[in-house]
Length: 90
Image 1: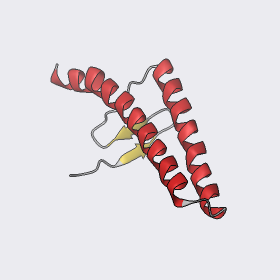
Image 2 (image 1 turned 90 degrees about the vertical axis):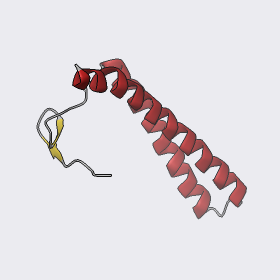
Image 3 (image 1 turned 135 degrees about the horizontal axis):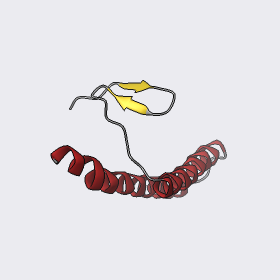
């Protein structure tokens, strides 16, 4: 599987083929909320480890983080299929 090189410009992120994402403001807001929550969960795991919290609690928190990331992936994939893939096919 190849990866695309990403170029940062002032107003958007462009891949080497010139594509950029087309996320609406509500989707971006939803993703930001989800990612902020995940960031907090990851900080919590770090704190659990520093405080020697019992492993099952750490593992449960990691499972919750994975589920949250799956939610982000689902939002992104849904948008990708509805917008980007359809646009490319047309």
